[in-house]
Image 1: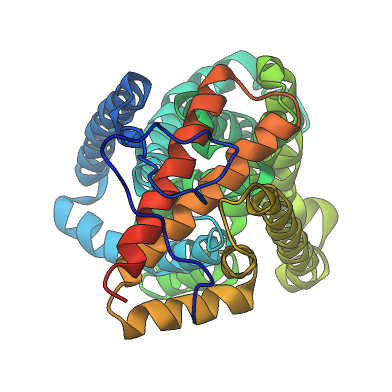
Image 2: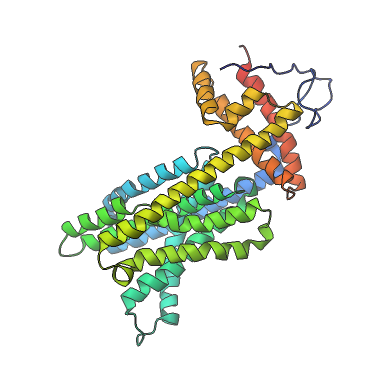
Length: 400
């Protein structure tokens, strides 16, 4: 791969670049780096605090489970639960491959799902049962818990984690794909801990280990993405809220996302016995089609995201900040493959990843501005990102 232009030389006495004239004229000096802002530091502090708190809650949940099953049993059941978790993480990596989310926020979502969501569900679930379960009604306690309590309480506690990330970092939660990733990672964390609970309960049954093997196949291999799909609806709705610039209306969008999440959860827990007579019919007639439809929907959203990024980066190309080759490199699969291969050959893969990440952040910021809901912070961030991309290009090409 070859770039069609070289970066300008810098002079310590020249004036800063106008963000919309492009870096064509020599003698341009970029402003201070993007990472020095007080707001970014404050956001980083909030994320760190949230990570510490969620880790503490997860440790309490682990202690609670150890009291039930024993610490040794929890450890090897946790290793078993890592199998479906790994499948979920690989799937979410595919969803997130085009414009990866910050690892700290992904870790926060995973920890919230595995710890805070489970703890909240256990505590709120008992209160919910006391308030709404009617022993004289048509549903017995176990069925009520599965088809009423679990879909409502669990999706609310998981949705709270997605909402937390939505509030914490506006810059990295600005579209449906972002929401699906964050919702999915929270759901994956919740499923991990819930699987330990189910595996432990089945292991304690008289039929173990045969009972455990059955539960592992059904939950870990047949349906590892169930909770991911449920909570992805909540994230999708909040992503739409961000994309449309209506963050002040988040309660409405949250409700819109929670409804299909709860309905999907209800169908999964109550499908066999209420809608279908046997598991295989339920699985192949309902769950598999829903899963395939979800994959198709994500694929279409990804294609739309790529096209939108190409249009927004085209704005910067027209202003002189990027070349045609660079826009193709950032916004097409073939271009990225060639760029990665070229950067790997010259030993600058890390610089290429940084350059690409900055370009994708620019596309997102520019879209908010063009859509009419960009803030003064977005304008400042755009300027800083443009100059950062200019500096990264120079690092990538120096000595070539």
